[in-house]
Each structure stands twice: as structure tokens, then as C-alpha cells.
Length: 461
Image (cartoon, rainbow, N blue to C red; front, side, top):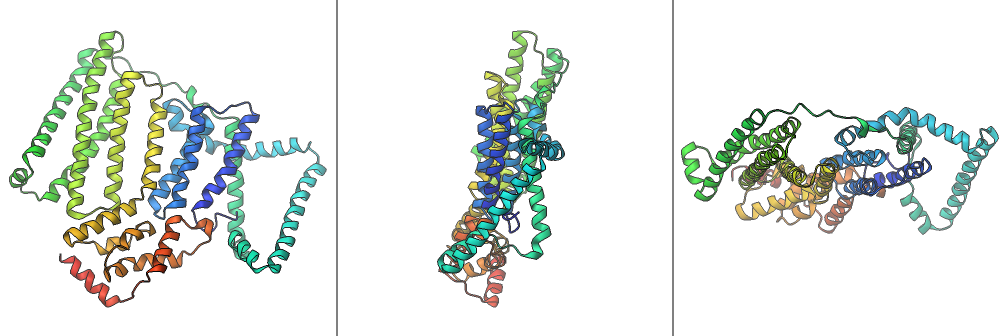
């Protein structure tokens, strides 16, 4: 109620820790004991909430919060299979209503069902809050330094914010009770059984995949020939520019990677499994397809790198490259599962996705974009001023390296956003605090005419 009304940063982690402890003690009281994977999910979910505490950009923080909720669901349910991993997050939503009644029953049991006992609990809470309020106000009025410390720590709540704060209180209580109820009595999604498909004959199953492998091999051979033979001949023959050739192929290769994963899933469903020869055929055909797909992944990443060299780095480009790299990792995990077994594959894939989101946030996409584009400006003199002005406070350290007056022109809009979003400490990310410190040390020069001239000059370079 007090912490979430002013923005999202460290306050998410502050709120999540007691909610996680409540779920832990509820599970312990119900006879459940934490297992290594449960601890890993819980620690990973809390670690993901460090991203909004450190970064100012919206996309990494959004992905981190969603992933933290997913990992928290896995920790509460203890899922192992694909149905458990994919459907687990819905289990928490089913507890949003049942958790409230469960919590009320528990409260009545703890107080012996007596209104007097319940009233004593409420009375203790009221007396405690009153003592803190009275003596806190006395100490604050007695010492200005203590008043400043107390003012920085305490949220600034006005009467007009009352309905919004009460709604946050209700959401927080209901959410914490839902998590605790799920931990005490989880839905057993792992009991959902997916029947294997009817096994096909060797020719019926393998022939389409062998033909697909030949097509992949031919494409990869052309890619290697172009790589070692140079792009000039290809560009001259096709009439495409260097950047157009790179942009033309990346999205198709990304879709091809996704479709290959679907092909592998359906192929495993209908694969012959009766004899050692059948299992060897499955490993050989699908293993070859996975290896060839990894070459496609490498080709897609190389094409995007070419495009970035020509036009610079953006949020979309760095995001899709991250997705392509993760898909390549999933293919490696599938290959490993073909050798050592697929029992842990659902959890490992989920863990790799969460680790990727955490790394994506901690590496700071906006910071990398700014660094790459500043370096490109120093090498070529080309710079997308309008795009750089839309970056978050994460980009300030890199953009601060630009020469004046370009530095002030780029950082102007970011500085205005920081002034408009001057929230309390618990709703301020580390990147925002660092950016404010940099801008205070080196104030910006405000010259609209100069910035407009620079923008026009950069457009024609």
C-alpha cells in the first residue's frame, strides 16, 4: 500500500520477500519441504526483481517481472513436466479467491474463533501503530537530522491517494494469500498425462526429415560459400545493398528456426521407438537437423550484425538477436536431452529462459545501444539523434561521452524525464540515480537552434 504507489524499482523486491516467506511457512505448515529446484526457482524469481531496481528501461523490467511471476509459480507448484511448467502460472490465479477464505479460516483458528481474541490482535496492531506515530513525531520534531532521515524513509501519502493506496493494499493481501494458499495446497499439473502419438513407420517418419536435412545442408553450404567468397559477388548478382541483403534474410531465418523447433516436437511425437535401431534413427536424423539449424542460427545472427554495422543498434534488433540466441540454446538442450534423457528438459528450458531475461536486463540493452551507436558515430560520423533521445536513463553514461553540443542535444529529453519522474528512493532505480549524478556534475547547455542544426546535419550524412 505504501511502497507501490510511486513507481516500480526496489520496492518490488521489498514486497516480494515477505510474500515469499509467507508462502514458505505456509508450505512448511502443510508438510511440504523445499527441494533444490524449488529453492532455485524462488531465488531466481527474487533475482529477476533486481532488474527494475537497477534499470530504467521498460522492456527489460517488464520481462523480468513477468518471468519472476512465472518462476514464483514454479516454486509454489514444484512442476517437473511440460504441462506443469506451462500451466503452473494459472494455478496462482485460481487461488486468488480461495486464498482469501483460506486465510480467514486460518485467522479464526489461530484466535480460537473468538471475537475477543481477534479484537485483541487488532488492538495490539492499533496500539503499536499509535506508539510509532506519536514517538516518531516527537523524535522528528526534536532533531532535524532524524526528521530528514525519517522523511526520506517514509512514503509521502496524501489523502487524495487514499482509494488508490487501499486498492494496492487489497491487491497485496489477496496476492500474498494466493501465493501462500498455492504453496500449502498446489494444483498438481504434473498429473496431466499427454498420450504419445501413434508411432509411424521408418520410411513414413524419416523420409520427410531427411529431405529437410538435405535442404538445410544446401542452404548452409551456400552460406559458407558466401562467407568465405565475400559478399561483393552476391550483392552484384542480386542487385541488393549490403544492409538490404542482411535485413532480407534475418527474419526468414528467425522464422525458420522457430518452425524447426515445431518440426522436432511433432517428429518426436510420432517417432518410432520400438527397437534400438529405431531409437538410433531418431537420434541420427533429429541430431543432424539440430546441427544444421545451429548453422542457420549463426547465419541469422551474422546477418543482423551486418545490418547493425550499416544502420546502428536498436531495441528491436538487440531483442530479436537475444531471442535467436536463446532458440539456439534450446536446440543445444534438445540435443543434450537426446543423449542423456529428457526428464529434466522442461525445467532446464524454463531456467534458461529466466536466465536469459535476467542477463538481458542486467546487461542493460539501452546502455549497449548507446555504447555501440556512440562508437559508430566516432568511426563514421553517423548518429541517429532522434532515436538516441528516446533512450532511458540507462544510456546516460555512454551518451555522456559525446562531444558538446551533441551531448546536450541528446541528453535533453532524458534529463526532462528525470526531472518529471523524481520519485522516492524505493521507486528510483540505480540507473536513474546514476544519471542524475552525471547530469548534476556536467550540466547541459540549452540551445534549441544549435540542436536543430545538428539534427539536420546528421540527417544528410
